[in-house]
Length: 79
Image 1 (cartoon, helix red, strand yellow):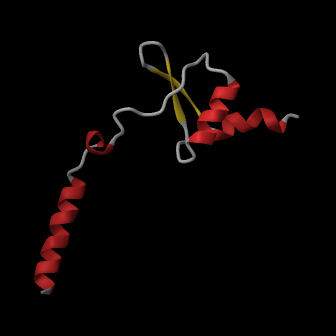
Image 2: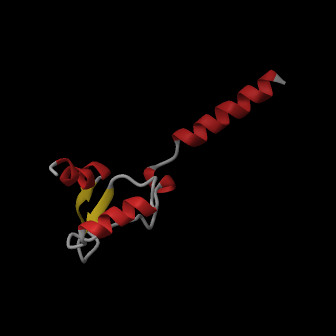
Image 3: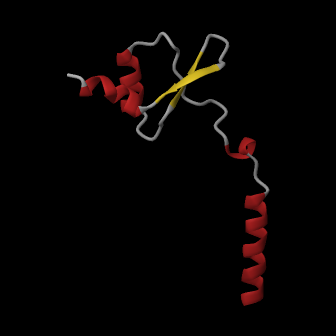
């Protein structure tokens, strides 16, 4: 029994280590455009609690930056 469990464990580890980013990535990630409003950014973080940071993409879907929860909170610290 122990040998069978060990063999299964080793097989599962081999499968995991063979994974590439493509195997686990999100094909349609949440993004935001550079000209989106501050309110839109806050809304995205509010509605998508587990997402941080959010890629900022141009009209050709090229990543031009990222915005994080901290970036959204920074203006509030200066009040």
